[in-house]
Image (cartoon, rainbow, N blue to C red; front, side, top):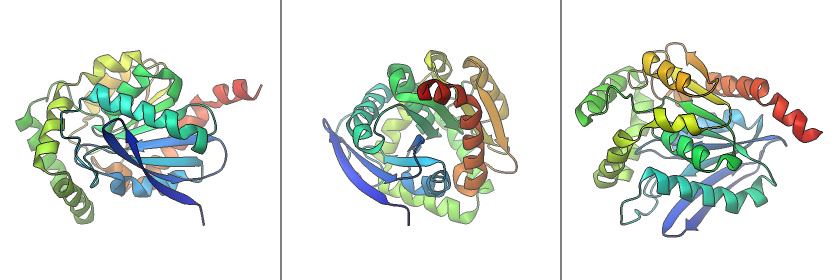
Length: 263
């Protein structure tokens, strides 16, 4: 059985949880959930990636049953917390070197900000269902898109999502929603210096094809991949296909980096 550990970490006043599965030597993946969620809806992708390397899923402060910070925490501070977390654990878990940052939904914003602020920590960035479309950044627009996505998701996926929403609670959700809608990911992604993969379900109403194309064009040489017939939580409903896309992307884009490092 693949060894797995779960730990809670205090970074200043923030508490994070990590679930780590140790895979073969090589690539390490850091998975970060979206608004209201936890590592639970990343679990299938987590398992699928362990054949490639070590996988670390993170629960952010206030999510997944972790304590709320009791104050506002914006995207920059959350990214700094993640950077401090990585600095602390990578000597133990990863030994040395940067990791592949994988975010879903609002998790894409935290990952882009982390990569922009600490390029030394990022080997590549994978954005699954990135938010928020620059043309749809009001609460009503996002609520409407979420409603459409909910109708298209399978019942078990919806049950998982809404159970985590309840654990998060409305106050922390709304506080983070304000930051999500105000974050200009299309500007910050231009500061990312490593390979970027934008990935979406082909029927995702939240991360539309047009938006993902604009976002990938803003990054330097980003790739865009669509998983057919899936919607926003594609990492849960098509974990194998998403993992394969990530593995192929890393194999193609990081081969030169690995060869340089080996030399």
